[in-house]
Image (cartoon, rainbow over all chains, first blue to last red; front, top):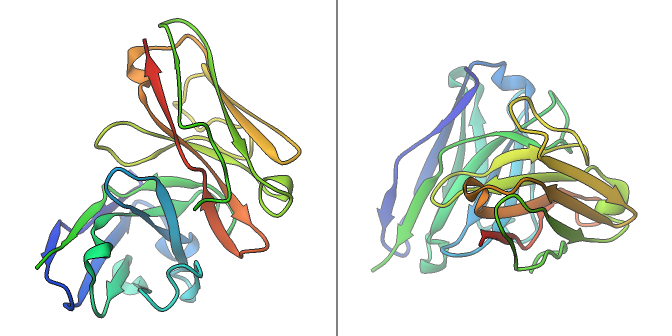
Length: 122
Length: 110
């Protein structure tokens, strides 16, 4: 079964760092782009960025460039989203999702992780 | 704010049909494939339509997609209570060089 399994919910304080993960299985992890999507409480979906685990080619939305870092470790089929200094406004659900077609940056997201809730509060 | 505009909500009685519009521009919908996602309450989004009008395996043919110019439309026929969810369009924006989602539409079954 093709699936993406994300790490569990996190509660952090402002200024702390955080790295959440997304582990792929059931397919060739290095051949499909993995994207990250933010959903703030009660709000819509926001495209944050995307990585190609095969060569770590990464693209960011200008809205998130410099605010987060996307990475991948192909040896363990895992993608990451990290923050160096969290803010209360980072409180949201974060989803990882796989591109539908191998190597196709522009294709739809066909497989989604279950989401990781990040809560930032003092 | 999103570059893709959807109506905030649509509603219809069970068995009826609803359509959801997604309005964009030449840099996104006009020159790229559109996809549609269903997000049931408390769950992750699910792909309903890709490449403007194709359905992944397992998606019933009650769901359909179309595109014309810089707009796309999702249609749902034979509306069921289980269709109550938020629906989002998505595509690539060639000018912004990023993926974009629509503002989202809540479907209510009366």
